Length: 261
Picture 1: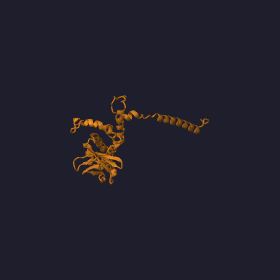
Picture 2: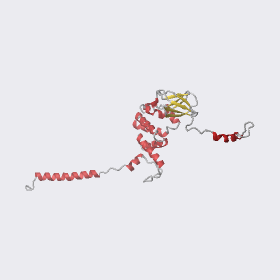
Picture 3: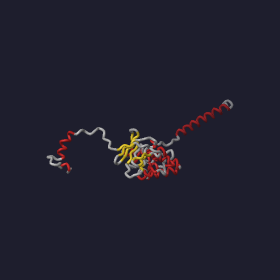
Picture 4: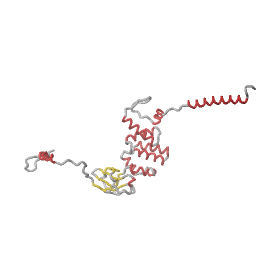
């Protein structure tokens, strides 16, 4: 603002006054923004990573062996397969760094769940707050119930849900499913969607509930599933008694006719 009031040399007008005359003559901005990033075309290595300016970044495992297009900006980089964005990372400033996204490796890890606990991408997800204590608690209980391999595979199925369910709702679903002892990805998805629905709709107060309470999975089952009834079985037993008595009476009459009696 101070420079706009400056005069260049001995000119009679200030910079702002000259710009006011020039501005109506300028062409409009283009419809598509000008790309200021630098473009690279690295090949994805066998670890599902690309190297850009000495630093390594992860991409989805399905792209191993393919060449991708990378647009490097001042603070981030974007990876494209053809014209589809497949990854986006914060740019590493230091040299020989590595930034991995756990989601990029899930398809491979679900086939080899034994590699999950020691994965570098898992440690980075913990440091970034994407893998929370709720994930760890649910995972520990799932391994205790289902075993190491199946429990870890169940957790990876939960992590895959994050592609369709917001992170905060998924964390609520994990915590609620854990309290209910529901250690399957389907149960977590149910509770996560309930958490999302609770944000969009006003809370409903029912018997034994207060507004804002989260219903446990077993409470939901008791509230929504009909209780079993034995009435149809009683009706069947009654018909059996009636038909059985009539059959015995007919048999007695056949064996001992009324004339002989």
